[in-house]
Image (cartoon, rainbow, N blue to C red; front, side, top):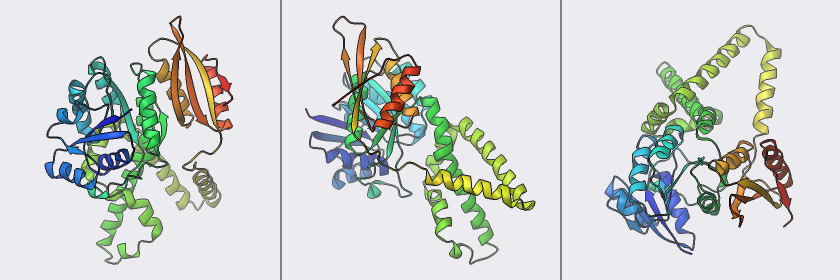
Length: 365
């Protein structure tokens, strides 16, 4: 079976998606649109697309899967335009780092026969543009999906499998939960890096050699401050409530540290340093090793079941390697078949789904 792709946006992420997809033997076409005609033509020259499209509709009309790789503030309208032009059965996804408003908009407006699944690859660099695109960018990274009750198992499974073939690990989360988590692990780090960089730059006016003294630690912590500022303006607008809440909590903790330093409370400072070191060392690696285990989950045929199951698994930080559904002949019920890596992950999935009332069975492969 061959696959045709529509690509709206051919910068770093969009270009990397195009390069990675074109390496797959069954992807026959990648139709690319970008606001800048030169950029879309360059995507073809770099091998990230087979054809440059003159309009978004031209890029998506034949596509089986559409990726929207545009700035956060532009995604909702592009997604609605893509859905209006897409063929029956098409899957539309995006790469934005905020999801709540987008998912609500698409849930209200997407036409029947077209599926929208919010997406967010946790990958990128401080570099920009198609010149920096890399087919290996997504290898080992988490790619978050935010399915809703309208998403069917076949569409989710198809997108999940395609992303897995790009080397990504797929996690499903509720859209609001995604935004809360991103405020901590993605948006706050950038704002912190920008603040620290600005502090050093301002102090550098007083001491001309300050920035030349910046060692590896400073450079590592502030690396993301080199990102495109316009992208972050959109992110701060779209996720302002979650970001403001996390900034308040972070500010409180920084002020606490200031008091500990002033009072020379070495014991409490040491506790916090040790806690941070332990947490940092316990960050999970990129790959989960172990045998692949199949879990069967009997489910009723009702809206929201797939989203509930997949987001429950996502909350555990477990990758669904593959997903299929077998419908019962009598109708009204079916069985989700989940493949997960490792016996520990499989047991955690079984326990979590059992608490939600699902009767999960492990199948020997």
